[in-house]
Every structure is written in C-alpha cells, then in structure tokens.
Figure 1 (cartoon, helix red, strand yellow):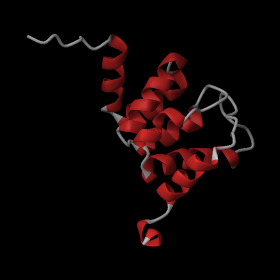
Figure 2: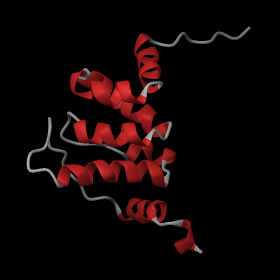
Figure 3: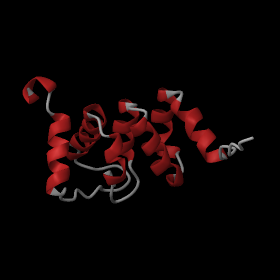
Figure 4: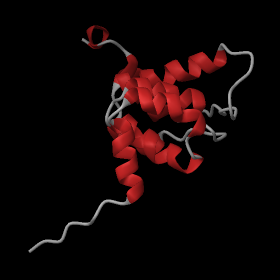
Length: 123
C-alpha cells in the first residue's frame, strides 16, 4: 500500500486561490509576501497568464527569478511576464518594489526568443 503525502495548508490555499482569477488579482496587494513565490510558480505552471502578469506588476521582491521555471516555458507564460514588465516600465512610480532586470545568459536568450516568436516565423 502506498502512502500519499497530505497537501500542506499553504498548497491548499494556493490551489484555492488559483481557482478564482479575480480573487487572486484583487487580493495581491494584501497577500502575504511568503505566498508570492509559490503562487507565482503555480500560476506560471498552470499558464494562468492574467494572474502571472498581475503578479509581476505587484511583485514585492527586488528580483524575479525565472530560471527555475524554464522547464515550463511556453510563449504565453513569458509573454505574460513581459507584459507585466512592460506595464511597470511605462509607470512613473513602480508599486511595492522595483524589479531589477538582469542580463540573461545567451543560451537562455535564444530559448526565450524562440518561445516568443510566432510559429509562422520558425518555419
């Protein structure tokens, strides 16, 4: 007989939040910062692009590490991140914390470009 681990309360809270997109987006300003990384990761994996964009805009930390999510890379995921960064760049005052943009390694940049190009250009 196999034993399944019980999900943590944090995991259950994240799953519950992600079921209601409007609730997540409206509660980001009041969300404890400890929930941001796991909530962002799960929204990214689930390809919930509206939540991903809103979380980038409200991100409370000085950096947004995406390297660990490269295995879940889809063009819509990264486009959602870029939409959030674009929104922030067009603001005169950034909310919460300023996200530092870092240089992407060359091989990661090639992958990012391939993910963002429309399929018709890759033929």
